Image (tube, helix red, strand yellow):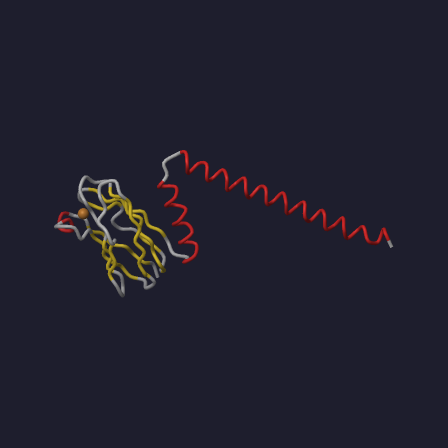
Length: 153
Ligand SMILES: [Cu+2]
């Protein structure tokens, strides 16, 4: 009776110790990440974490765009259909924004980007085709801040 009762108990203990090791490893990993964020500057790290989460949930792609005076780089990105997130960095010396003419809607950043600022704009590009994007500030579009995103079929 006693020995038949021991075996399951041992198995249970082993399982629990395995869980405990995993839990410790997980908390160490979290602690390490938190320390990094505190030390270095990082709005960039924080932003990336958020975006990764969002992209994973929606399954959409992320396009990195740099805005300068006066163009976007790249100006001809290609993506798969879906919810596309444009991460815009203003590397210019004046205010910029991003407006995307999607298939059913046009979208732009709620606030213009000051020099050095970054912004994220998500647009529903679930239909294949080519869609124009540009900077809606002043005459920046005429100055060359215009591009085309291709949604592959
Ligand atoms: Cu602009």
